[in-house]
View 1 (cartoon, rainbow, N blue to C red):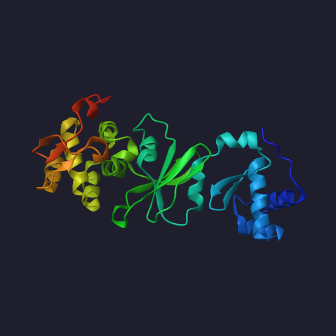
View 2 (view 1 turned 135 degrees about the vertical axis):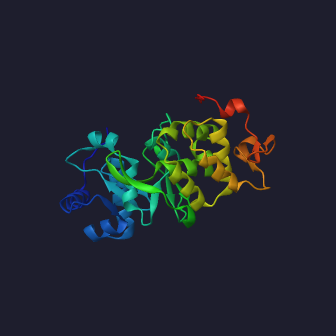
Length: 275
């Protein structure tokens, strides 16, 4: 249990923040409230973090832990998704975090993936690593509003989550995990939207991997028009199915999709029940 006893200036700051209904604060906020120097503001912030009155969000930003609720009661309920409130750029929750939201994985992620257009460094928030994934403007679409851990956030929709996973398999647990999530998502997938998004992304590797896996997994109720449209992306360039860093570039060539089967079939289909 953290000792929460406050000094005079700490008490003045906390009371002022709660009176003003402030949730997030930074060093300039502390300076303005206490009329103090930058170094003293950092000293106060460090002390309040140690005492459990504020939570560090990195880069001199903090989250206030309200006195009326208390540290012991509030801490377990604090969600890393609160950091989306202070992002000063468009974002969406994606990749492994989105697969969890859409019930496509049984993993409890210890990383929060946030897609952004400008690079940001990762940081730790409580027991979660917040990782920012830089996405090009062309791929920055296909998201919706959702409520996660009582926070209103923006998250990639089901179809975009599938395509993002095919684009960056390593972020969701590898191509084997992608195979499983496609099968789990298939009853809810809007295939017309999936094809539209595939075209909008303009990524040939994503398209041929999708076509190959729909065929290999015998995904039920896949409209016949889907593989027909996806085959338009097949050309002379061979695409590795799995991540090259993990699986290498060697494997049997699937001539229908011009895919290098660099992942052993038993690995690809592990924990996947083919219907």
